[in-house]
Length: 320
Ligand code: COA
Image (tube, rainbow, N blue to C red; front, side, top):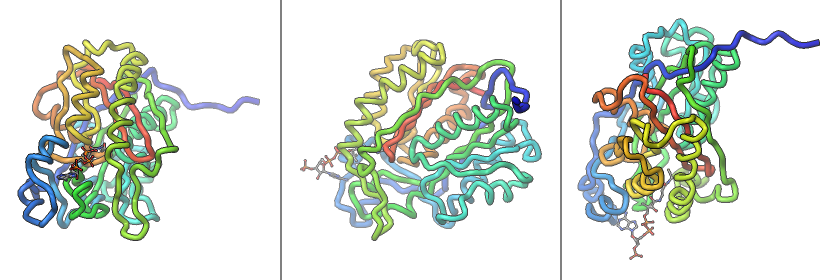
């Protein structure tokens, strides 16, 4: 016998985005004033950050809630119509339970499917792809996708290798059905042999990374992922309105952008004032570009996330 499957839409699209960044700005001078052995010139030239945002009282879920409320409002889709919530985070407030169901309850979303994704800095792109696939399969109609991180809970703020880079924030999107494809095929993959390159130290519960290993991997691999995501979506790099790579390091962003070699794409450089917010960095940068009116509705945008695992994911989406 064959089982009945749900009716399937022709495509999916992002209907709206929102973001939240904590109000507390931490400049490079503030970091140096704490006694960290670093300097402003090194941070600007090697990483590209001038300031970042640190959450104070806000929890990871508080930030997720505000970003989600804005995404719902911008999408025109009400909480009552969301039937799946996917929360991408690697800074969960506790091991069990995951945060997605609690987030849904806080937003007044009734009995949705709800789960967390831990693909670190690639998490938002994994979550958008999973949301799109759930809608395309007919298993969900409207999906809330969130990337939210309170990295300052898991970073030694006195460590010159990580304390200068990571920051806090959240970004969210609503994925829904569409009569044409507004979310392209995902190019995703991983390199578990190098899992130790970014890892939470068990004793101190803080993040450690082999910066140069990750740098070499990202700069040698992500250009190909970017080009492949364009190819699979049937979009030339010169048709892109924007390129939003994970905001890990300005030098990495510029090297991937060079390989993409797009004559048209605005390159997201939100890291300069936001730092590295892991799974939140792509939706924050995208939401801010949309708010500033830098991307026309329906224009193609390339997203490429990469990070701990090691994991990566790239995808072209159309602007809401
Ligand atoms: N301030 C000042 N000097 C610093 C410093 C800091 N915060 N951190 C390192 N240095 C010094 C080192 O002591 C070393 O000095 P030396 O040449 O005299 O020995 C020099 O800078 C180079 O150190 P290194 O660790 O090789 O730095 P780097 O150029 O590789 O930059 C990162 C470090 C982390 C910024 C960079 O490797 C990176 O961005 N990697 C990728 C991170 C990433 O993408 N993560 C995944 C996503 S979360």
